[in-house]
Length: 324
Image (tube, rainbow, N blue to C red; front, side):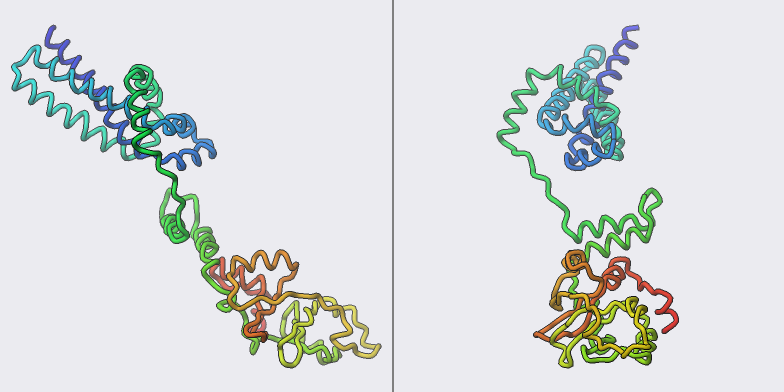
């Protein structure tokens, strides 16, 4: 009967030490910023752990005090029945295998799950050891300042997103991953890399007459907007909206381009970053913007060009397919 009691006592002490060891590894591996994000998304474990992680030194002191107490009492209990050598051997093996290696390996696999499920034990240990843990917390807070949370760089975010490709547990599909990666790279790319060079741009001069022949020519291009430049391509007078040409009456004298309503546009430099272009399209209320370099118009960029860069695929409409 006495042996059974000693065995139960040893099992209880080793179990307490195992919990403390596993919780120590799991709790200290938790990132406070990550916990806050998960708490905002409704993770109940994260909500309970955020207050404890904010006072990490208090919780750490409570865990280690409890762990040391359980580990110290274990050989004393065994020594009451066995000789000193055997007590040391059995307590060392049991504490090393069952109270250190196995719980740490288990708890490290899913830290937030185990700490969340056993958060009540963390609170209990804090209350029991508070008279000793609190002074230790104050000392640790003074000696070791809390580390500030560092944000991920653009390249790190791209790698994190790429890890979702092929992962069965990921909520992102391949298209979403490509779109996110494309958006992250916008600030590193310039307008010159996606613009249509001026040699491939259909444009009109202000003195061009819009007759039936010109209308057929415009229809063949399949464009919805036509920029209007001077002959030296240093000035943009605006953009002609093709759908407004439907109202032209060809029984009347054919109008010149400068007699029609042109929508003003602002030029952008060829070195403008693509993320800046998004704000430019929004603020100017236009889908086509001429690109200049060295005071000369060298091409145009459209909102479609920008979207194609994000999604990583060319967007073709019916007229593009017909023209090709």
